[in-house]
Length: 550
Image (cartoon, rainbow, N blue to C red; front, side, top):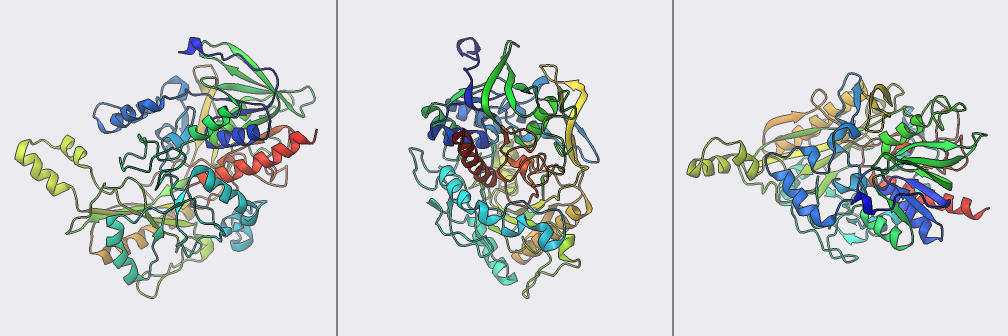
């Protein structure tokens, strides 16, 4: 296949986008629709949609490693992890056209107004240089572009004027079990917006409930960025796969980027020239590319005069509590969240008169908490059968005993930006092209631990009110990341402490822009993809205006 694809560079184009995930795809599609010539360079391959069923089967059949589903692993994807916590980077990465949306869960929430104003409101972290009002119209555009199913039933959500493009998915059966306990405790439940079809839309079928949403949606009902890649190509964009960009080269003055140097599968290097460049490689590969692009003028990495490239790495941490009920819960009947709770998001210290205790520390001592009601808790029948050592009727009895009465709550806790959490280059290990691999230096601070304990406390109270026997809990000591990479090329107005402007152009180079969660200033506790999409659409507006000004 690689021999039949033309991977030589185009003549100098208006815009070169590095990365064909959601941010890069949306930027490319928007700019092409406005008449600009765009080339997208993608490090990974273009997966065949016809293979989705086979990839789904890899996730449920024994003998297949998790990384094999989307062809991750090996020298190409090597990385290093340092710090007090090991960071399993490859467990949730996809290098390919569509990026992380090929395997994401599909939840899409707007950040709250307070997420943009943590310093002003609580004297912690930092404020964004933009506020919710600046991003609000782009959120609406992003919901339309991604095809979001949701409802206006969340009393804690930020204001909106328009309905979601599709109606929300109905609550799962286990959500209905939680509802009575939450009502008794004064806890509000509400729907979760999802970027998946609750009805037919744009030629795609509604969700048919395979339940393998992460890591594979075999039906295509869940949004992935290949939709906008296809639209962009229809508008004239050229998308080239399997061409990892090795470095960005700038002009003699060090004021603008001249070319993206990329390698083809046979190792040949080419230079793609453009008037403007957009880096949209995610929160790890974006800073890595900038650091790999060090030069005599920029010895510490491109666009890094502030020293902030790679710094302030943030993720969301998982909090969970689960157990068993003395009744059936229909576990595993739905593969995604249908109900959540943002009641403790802006103020995790609040209690309820009906039974949730108040926290014993001030608001500034906690990060944001988002709670979720899991309808896919507990083992699946297949996993029970595969782990069993019995056969026949005995096996059937063990499945009946182990499956069908599990219930759980999940949730995310946001990390605050800390300079000592970073993405750097590990010069002791190189990838398949001889480049230093990314090094993730990551640790969990006391604020995050305290917030995880608080989430666990609320979860346990709800489960015990439900009458569940709590059998497990994931909290401060056993937690893991949600693989939402944020903060490593942060946005700001001060070139000495940030990497990009509020328009998402780098401070140091006039024609270099960055799209994606790496520009986040704080993390909140919401899944980041909708904000990534909104910021990409905002960037496209600014870049379009810049192209038209010359």
